[in-house]
View 1 (tube, rainbow, N blue to C red):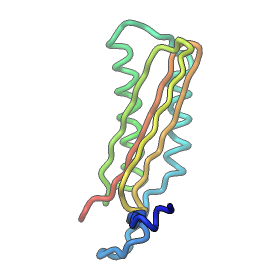
View 2: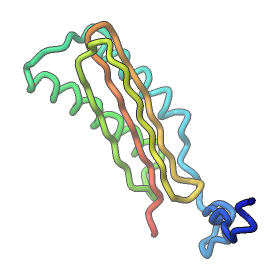
View 3: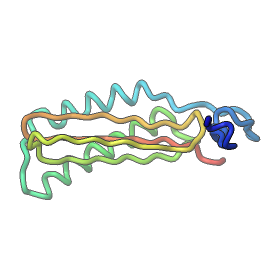
Length: 132
């Protein structure tokens, strides 16, 4: 039996649905992606895992604030921004992450991964258009 004979159908994506709002600009991801890659490399290239929580918090705070500030430089209005940073000890472990979203085409998720022999850092930046 096919799924169509059962009456199932895929929902219409928001990009295919008619929008009641006029088209608004999309967040420009490429300058942020390049910035995040360079920022993680320069901030963490010589970093060594430590159990000093304050040091790890300092790295994360520096990264997330600088990424958020860069997002505001790229597009100062019309978006809400979220930046998530995780730093963990590199013990040669495997890992996997995924995300699903339901948003408009102009919204963006930019992620960057950095690792060396001692640490693994994941940085995720989200730009979601505000309603105004």
